Length: 244
Image (cartoon, rainbow, N blue to C red; front, top):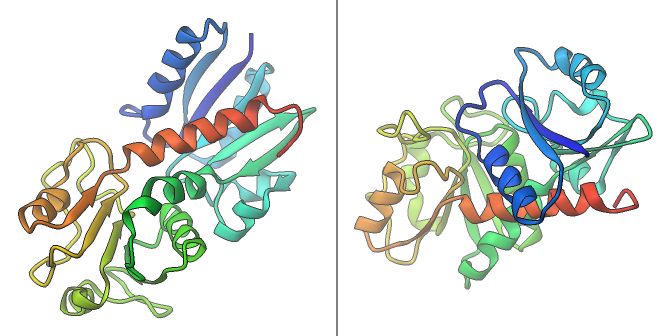
């Protein structure tokens, strides 16, 4: 039996444990998947010591960047992104990957059509995978932040210039369960039916942001497909005989 898991700070409503537990049951595999809530990334060593059969784990907020110094190898895509959400253990070595990049690209590419400019709401680890994915797909992007720096836009500026950016990706946790009444402070007054609003949040399925997009007849999508794609890619990495 092999063990897998997820490390993060608050994992009560995690998708990964239920997804992989169901997968193992359906495929008749004797594996297990556990949530490891860490108050600090420094506790990772304790997890590795206590779970010698751990073959791989996912990484979520806020440790996608903090885990980098603990890794023995970084995949080129993860290097490009600057964040890791999947780790494979082989002979005591930790190999880091970013399957968020893969999941985002595969979940949004069929919706882009001729849209070429994007706004990314937020500047955390998830936003880095989004930025790398958009660049890979040929889009230019600007970050949007409450405290803009390094070329990022304020939410007020982004609201005023929305017509120039026909793709908007929410990479913040605003609107995630249980705080379902929240939304990023972006006004959609200038939104048209040509806009695509993509929210990485999948719980709830329709955030306040997506409900507003629907009301304005735009194209909208949540992050569930991205999550499924990235999870399957993580499974491919964990079960490959080589470190891909």
